[in-house]
Length: 467
Ligand code: PFF
Ligand code: NA
Image (tube, rainbow, N blue to C red):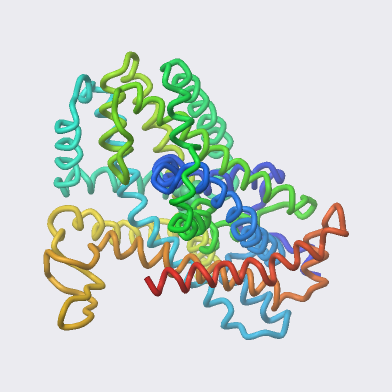
């Protein structure tokens, strides 16, 4: 029976390692950079409330579906869906959903690596004292100088990709499990240190008020943003969580495991917000929106306040580690699939996939300098164009990849996974694999999976696309 099946890639020592891996994947730039700014921009407390509902009602069901399918299939997402579809008498084309997710994860990695490279650059710049007493114009100019320099961006991007490939190349237990056991506790310690520091700035409550003030007027436009962010922040819809599920021991309760991961991701996002804003206020600054907060405003703040250099270094090390443990999860679905398919060694396959992401990532590197005027998805008076060399309208290469993955591939992948688990997989197989401690909850969980989550995703998806 498939019940005894074991993954050829390895198996985690316990369900806690799955929690480490899934949390490592979830906690990343999405929590530390994107969430605090979005909460500020979309009405604080109201946004946080909607975001929490989306995590619980859409994000967690998709995560449950992915983990359950992965553990049942015990293979890479593509082969897991293929074999489960065959066993359920459904079309093997279901594996295309995982194929798309796998590609999306590689594309996300291509630009994630470039942005994580900026964090690496900032660790060094902080440590050298580049930001001591710097003003807004100076910090802005420094960020612009970094993004205008293709060679420097490429070097950091290369280094980050090597770090990511190194862990994946060593394998599930020797690479992933061993490094996550060190990285994740370190990440939490750094975060607590930063939180403690922000408590001493004397502006803690100001930061909390900024994050949680309830602005009802901003709720409507924030709902869609909150739903989209719930997907990205939990890393669902691409198969990363599914492949980690394939390495999960059989005797582990899925429900409480998933809830733990969702809670940890949320706690990190809220803590990051509460750690960052007081620092910004302590420096007498207003929190700015977008990439500016992390790479422009925050360095000014760290350059102004006492012991700012030390905590600035701590902060960017934290960002780099969080991005690193997310990046490895983006590579794993494709590496596992290619090892299964080609029978080649894991290091060889890893190198191949990393080179692919590295090359695509060069497009993102150049989209900030050499190719800044190359635009995709351009609409102008004479109609719609996929590609135009123009300085107005459309999206740069980086923005296009980000748009394609987050707005299209991710929700579509999540929708297909949740439909597969809820409608294709046999109900009794699902019930057995889920093995709820409280069987009476089963109808509720199953209803969330079959109806509420797919409907929610469809609504985001259609609304986003028709914007
Ligand atoms: N969850 C990550 C973050 O919040 O930064 C981003 C991410 C990781 C997205 C892994 C997709 C993925 F497969
Ligand atoms: Na996240």
